[in-house]
Amino acid sequence: MEGVAGVVTGEQLGPSGFEYQRFRKFMTDEALAAIDGALEAGAKEIVVADAHGNGQNLLIEKLPDDVMVIRSWPRRFGMVGGIDSSFDGVMLIGYHSSTHNMKGVRAHTFSSAKLTKVKVNDIAVSEGMWAAMVTGHFDVPIILVTGDEVATQEVKGFVGDIEMAVVKQSMGFHSAKSLTPNAANKLIKAASKKAVSRLKDFKPYKLRTGKVTLDVSFKNYQPSQILAYLSIIERIDSHSIRFVGKDMVEVADFFVFLMEYNSNIEP
Image (tube, rainbow, N blue to C red; front, side, top):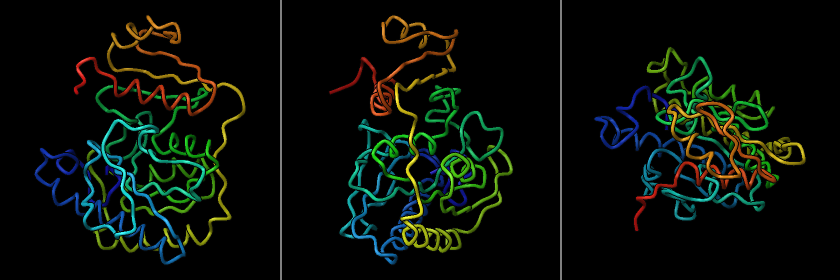
């Protein structure tokens, strides 16, 4: 949602923000624009994953009857939950840049409150880059990314030739020069239509064969200390841990556990 046109602060991003209800509609409209473009280009089946905040943001009654929607957490593969090898492409709508990037509106990686860096095979990643690694495991390429110019270029620079829809220009962490919602929707629809029409041009992002190393750095001290009690975890500095998985699926499963587990979970 941070990459939706007009979004600049927490006032648009969660139920306590005074603009959240309006921006739920704008977020839904951007998803609809991507859906409409894909359908016009010949897409036959679409699954939408609500991947922001509580995972219950999209106004699902506004979506076409034949679209399936994935909502809330926890779920396997997180933001790209539901991915498998049956899909032809993935569109990342409303994405933001990474926590290690010096630019971008609301730049963070997975949790602005908890994490300062996430690295895979020694590459610091954004959420879009992570998505490409997970979907690439299933031979599914990223075909479109939308958001500010920093986030979109971050993903394109990582995966290569994909379509982009830049709906705003970052002027700082909490400021941007933005298209209006209607203008953004037109841009996203056109980019989506072009992306689906070019499906054969895109290649999945493939990690090198062999084990995959995940490094996670926390804002606070104790998470790395406590996680290091596990034999599968190496504490590599005071705030960071390392997990080595057999492939990206195992790493992604561990990361969902890392972000979701709480001993007070109910029911």
